[in-house]
Amino acid sequence: MSMEGHDSGGLDEDKVLVGEYAFGLLDAAEHARMARRIAAEPALGAEFGLWQSRLSSLDREFAETPAPAAVFGKIESRLFGAPTGPQAGLWNSLVFWRALAAGALAVAALAIGFSLLRPARLDPQEFATQLVAALQSQEGSGVEFVALYDTVTGNVRLTALSGSVVPDKDYELWMIEASGTPVSMGVIPMERTEMTLPEDMQAHFTPGTVLAVTLEPKGGSPTGVATGPIVAMGKATMI
Amino acid sequence: MTSASAEIAELVARTALRDRAAFRDLYGRTSAKLFGVTLRILRDRSEAEEALQEVYVKIWQRADRYVAGSCSPISWLVAVARNHALDILRARKPVHDDIGMALDIADGAPDPEQSAVAGGERSRIESCLGELEADKADAVRGAYLDGYSYEELAERYRVPLNTMRTWLRRSLMKLRACLSA
Image 1 (cartoon, chains in turn yellow, green):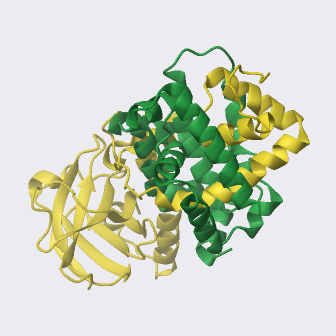
Image 2 (cartoon, chains in turn brown, yellow):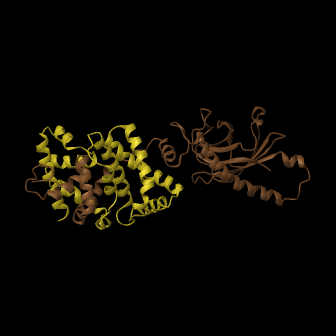
Image 3 (tube, rainbow over the protein chains, first blue to last red):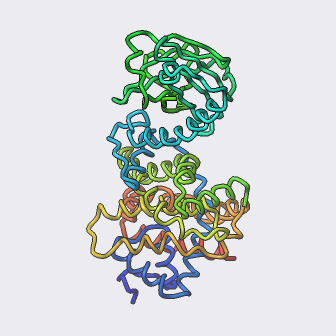
């Protein structure tokens, strides 16, 4: 008599059970019982291994389907406790920004180091009113910028350190305030460029402001909010 | 192992060492496949999405159980996803026993024979399935790929439950004899 009361039709009941187990055909109680037996009895373990190795070639038939973008943030928040809400993407993740800003600080410090190598400047006013942001490459984009901001003139000097032009795309610069809302500073070229920050934005450009570059459709984001991937990012630090 | 497979094996190994960047990379490389698994078996997008999260939480927690070289890393990842999805299906029915342990076993215990699995294996299982009657081969595939239970298969093929059970059990043994020949 078979252990689960079904007619095994003269088949080797244990082998049938392992097959049913491998295919997921057993109910929860039988499945759990077989799992314990497979762990405890080497012969059954070998039998299960045979099925696993043979069946895995069927795995190719599972069609690849891109998962929704928000899923990974939710996984990270389950594992690492980042406070991301249900809709929260990178843009809204405070932890994400903080982590990256911390990384950016290291590069900013390097930039400060370089600036200190220049002949000493005696004008304390000038020295106190400049902000630098090293925009580091994100997700392996290879795009890096350094931004220098003069708080007196409202002038932003942007220099690309690395990266290349992407056909039919533009890089767009964003300023992210402490509140986390990104405001566009416009499309930027790869060559060295200067722009003057609109007066209403000047007051918001302070130490701790994060600058980010995204890859957008030609002419910049059509919606006024970032639509493309973040390719470079960094936090403004006073120098 | 192909180079893509070796790269994924390395990402799994780095994930086992708690390398978050590697984990992120692993997710980027494999999530579409695993979402395909949970979606096909659960047939509900939001449930499949929820399951996918749980699958990667498990992968993070269990990456150290993957034994490099014992089976292809993607097979291992698919097994984690498939087992989890099947477990959700099973949990919809009355549960009488601890199902968590079943998962532990099913995810692990890779067999040395799996290292021999290569491209040629597909034709082998396909040809063995081809030796079964067409509807029985379809039922076997449905059990593996769609997670169909005996009840669902009996309904789909309009046969009594016990008939389906007998069919499939005999088919599995024929398949096994062919695969191990």
